[in-house]
Amino acid sequence: MTTIIAGILMLGVLVFIHELGHFVVAKMCGVKVLKFSLGFGPKLVSRRRGETEYQVCAIPLGGYVQMLGEGSGEQGEEVELSAEEKARSFAEQTVTKRLAIVLAGPVMNLILPLLILPISFMVGVQMPTYVDQPACVGYVVPESNAAVGGFLADDCVLAVNQQVVGSWNETNKSFISHAGDDLIFQVERDGKHLQLQLPADNNSLQGMQALGLLPWQAARIGGLAADMPAAEAGLQKGDLILQIENYSISSWYDLKGIIQKVGNKTVPIHLERAGKPLIVDLTPAQRDGEGEYLLGIAPLYNSELKRFGFVDAVREGASRTWELIELTVVFVQKLFTGNVSTKNIGGPITVVQIAGQAAQTDLSAILSVLAFISIQLGILNLLPIPILDGGHILFYVIELVIRRPVSIRAREMAQQVGMAMLLMLMVLAFYNDIVRLWG
Image (cartoon, rainbow, N blue to C red; front, top):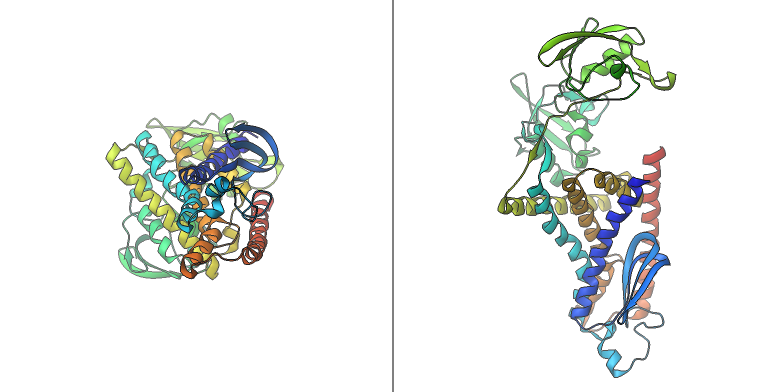
């Protein structure tokens, strides 16, 4: 419940920023704002201040700014107004002013990361140490894209589609421009260079680990589950597992298979603790008496806190913002061309989950997730789909070209089509969310 509430609050911040953009520019243009609403549906809280009613509604999946002379309805663009009211009507503004008001919401969402990501980099970002190291594989997940493509442990990636890469981070970034394409890897194996290819139907947009390529990970304990064999046997955080029974352990990825071989036998675990050898006997257990055998341990990930000065933080924030914008634009483009599966679309449940989990960590993680979702919200609203901001922008661009407004009838018909498209997209997104949760 805490995660859900935190997620809704973070989403509310982004909706507020978006609607604030519309509101501020409308006021600057002299347009009368009737309502400023966070959420849709029944009112929960409402207060009038001046000529505007501010409200919070029950369905926290968006918001809106209602202006005099906008759309249809009691105070829409077809309603007869006095000369004074006409001067403050949205419909009576020049097309450039209307365009600016509508653009302001998505633009605010795209500007927000430029303001908050530098704060994140100044506060300090906890980064896994491997991301800046050469992209050498520690483990290949069986039956993954990478395994099918012929990758082996200890392979080092040198280039992707002829783009030279020097680290895990650079390799992940290289996938953005090649999403939906075949990936051709130049790989070094045992001192020799070879080429491996993954077909276009892959998970590269989610990074190397989604392809099944994991960095080397020492078998060092980073966490223990209560009431599980490892904790009960006295294992501690920081212990390095060297051997289980007669099986040597060279990395964390050796553990799972060996534990399944051992089963429910009591076996000696050879450890290194604070530089000294130690042997502990324990018996793997099955959760709820069935399934895989477990020790109840989690790995210790090596990471470092990176802090930046103001100038470097601004530079890193701008770079990260552009990277996120590029990733989102490429994803949308590949989605419409069919190169990326619609299974990758996440809905409100996923967004709230991601935001809620970040909200329970640290300030840097909160700001990073806010930036990521804000960019997605901004770009989504710029899509030329009637009913979204992008649809209105399209109408105003057409008006600039043909020098007259698109007829109300044409706009209403287009908005009905846009509403149907948006509903289908929401149904698909909710379906994907439900499959991820309970599938």
